[in-house]
Each structure stands twice: as structure tokens, then as C-alpha cells.
Amino acid sequence: MSDERSLDEQVRLDYRGSVAWITIDRPEAGNALNPPCRDRVRDILNGLNTSHRARCAVITATGDRFFCTGADLRHSYGATDRSTDVPERIMGDVRRGMLDGQYPLFNALLECDVPVIAAVNGTAAGMGAHLALACDLVIAGDRAKFVEVFARRGLVPDALGPWLLPRIIGVRRTMELFLLAEDLPADQAHAYGLVNRVVPHDEVQPAAAEWAERLAAGPSRSFALTKWLVNRSLDTDRATMAHDEAAAVELNAGTQDSAEGVAAFQQRRPPEWKGY
View 1 (cartoon, rainbow, N blue to C red):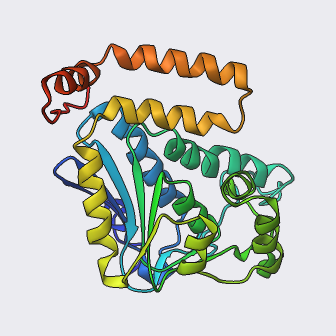
View 2: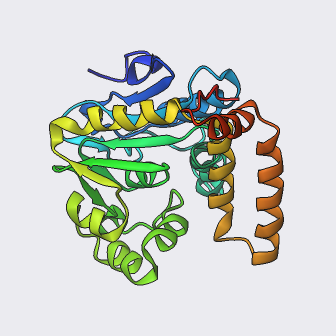
């Protein structure tokens, strides 16, 4: 396989009922993401907010070894449309490339209205680790590992890792992972709280499917507002959060699912969620 394959072959989108499965299929590159593939994942996630075809999403990858090994370093990130007297890369290019390319992917993931599950089937390194950790739920196979690889390459952690990890596991463990850059096996990642569940390698996708189908059958607008509140919580003061909660509760009260939940409780029957 090579990058000659079409973009929708390298990052596949499949709908299984009301679940969108996003599969990175670049095993020859360790399922690393070049800019076109990175942007396709972003565009798929953004599209889920308006299509309402899916009520949950799963991000996973092909093969037995790699979930995503980060950015594809074989790809040239320099500008290509400059005159011959301008260097291929100048100060500001990397910063602008990250702000325009990498961060919109993570914004799309964190702000996606539907719950997103990472089904980690192998090594998740660098940006690939953060791609998994930015999901709402993480299921990892027992052969999976997470690698904050940056220090091994003399690089600075990026892809929102310095924002994500301290909020999940605290500063001390984050510094240990960043500075020592040691492999973190799935069971240790679970003990740290980075992973929700560890399952046998062959059960990663079935376990993700079980949770995804459960979520896809749930009150989708309530989930979207819950994500919004939780993602704001660690950057918001108490008074602001109180107003945010009140606004979210009022917005949710106007949904059909909210009315259904109350009716089902009063009638002592299981609710039938519509997703709106």
C-alpha cells in the first residue's frame, strides 16, 4: 500500500447503524497521519455535527500493531508556492502550520456533538496518543501502548498533549511521561486513568461497538451538552460554571428526549430516545 491510494481509502468512514466508524488505514506508515489524512478526520468529525446520521463515533485503525504513530514525518510541511529566492521554511511556518492544521483536528474532536470512542488497537504515539486521549471514552487492547515520544526525537510535546494530560493525570505523571518518554502499557494507562477499559486485543472493536451502540441509542442532545460542560469545567470558575449548567439544563429541557425522559419516568417504562 502507498499514499497513491485515495484519501477515503486511507481514512475510511463507515456507518454501522447510527455509529460512524472512522478507521485510519495506513499500516505501511504506522497509521501516522499526513496533513490530508489529518484534515479528513477533522472534516468527518465536523460533518457529524450537522448530518445527524450518526449519534456516536468510533476512531480506530487497521492492523495489529499501530493505532496511530502521530504525524507522518515523511511528509514535507514546508511551503511549496514561494519564489526561488525565499527559503523553503522560514520562522513562523511551523507555528502557522500547527494553528491551521493540527489544532483544528483536536478542536473538532473535543467539540464534536456526538460521543467519540477511541478503540486503540496498538501503539499510540505522539499526536496519535493525544488523538486517542482527546476522545470521550478510550478502550485499549492489552497489547496497546501509549508513547509520549517527543523527547526521544528532541521535540516539544504538541497536539494539545500539554493541555490534555495534566487535566487527566496531573502534573507529576505528565512530566514523567513527557521527560522520560517511556512506553506506557495499556494496563498502566488504565491505572493512571488515561484509559477507561483494557480488553483482550481481539475484543477491542467489539467492546467499542457495544458502548457505541449503547450511546447511539441514548439522548444525544443531553450527551452533547454534557460534553460541553465537562470540557469547559477545568478552565471555568465556579460562578461561570453555575451559569453554564443552568443554560445547558434549560436548553436540554426544550428537547423531545427530555420530555420523553420525564414521561417514561412518570409512566414507569423505559424511555425511547430519538436523539433530538
